[in-house]
Length: 447
Image 1: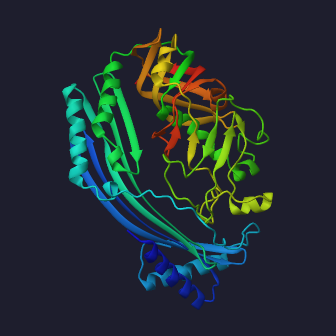
Image 2: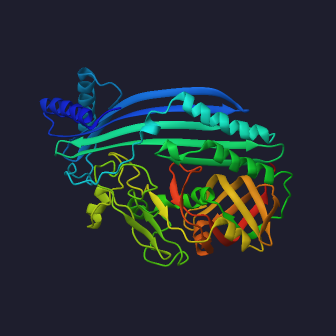
Image 3: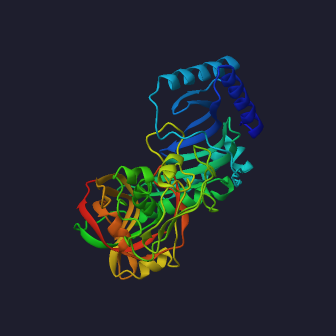
């Protein structure tokens, strides 16, 4: 694992070679990644793999022209080659009128997210957790499949203006799908601290869902009250946050175009982007070396703040928010540390207060239908239940849905306390379970 000192030494070499080539402005991204994964299926551990790698990315800037080259070789000849190629690309590039000078150094608040229990995890430790989970599932006559992984990452960003930023982090993930004869259940968790993950508890949860949803009934499509567990909230609501971007709004491809400051959602909806939240993960600086700022994305149902890269902030006459990606890129910026503030209604209380509705464990295969109203289509899976008279009465066949996320967030009746949730999304979020009315289930699926 690369230390901050090692990252700095690599940048010093890059800068020395760049200056020898007549380049004054150079930026270095350098990192290392260690990941180990134990995979299981059919109640058997069938794979254990480990990967270790390092990477170096060099960006040369010549006025308003830039070029970047990435390599996984660290000997001086390879670094020299990367500098030379980046310089050649910069010379051949068209000038970018929006390209700013390299970022100046600033104070970046550190976050501590490294745990020895995660970094030092052994195959035997992961196998022990998986074995205990499999035994519980087998005792119920079911079949389990899933993964248990541990990671350790380090990342440094330096430039010739004196910017120096470094972050190291561990991450553990456990995911399990439990299959019964005609039903399934699922659970997933991630944490920087492996000691917070108890595989057998997730196996128990998934097994119970598979048991409770056996012999599923078919309910006619329609609009029903819905209770979305946190993973389902992440899967669906997580689709909208790429629109909280100055680039998306400038391109008029965001649902927030001409809507910032207007009441769009229910007054009980409050959403932040906060890398410093204790349940969040990730680096406290962005791909441009700017410190991540806390954003009030939605306040009492009103979209308030958006993410700005340095270039878009300069054009708008505001400060960058620390959500930009490494240059050059076509994305611009995006909030990456979503925190949907929860309420005080437990999932059990949501169920108890429901006369007739549908409880959803998670969603998948989600695609956008209408980008302005954020209408999404997708399917439920791994635990869909009918709730009647305040109780879960039976499992249901899975549904396809067509649902506007804007309308969903207008219709939220109650929220649970927020938790760190994992789902189909590329990054995890801090989200509550929600209960909402008039969720649009359009079709019963055949699997």
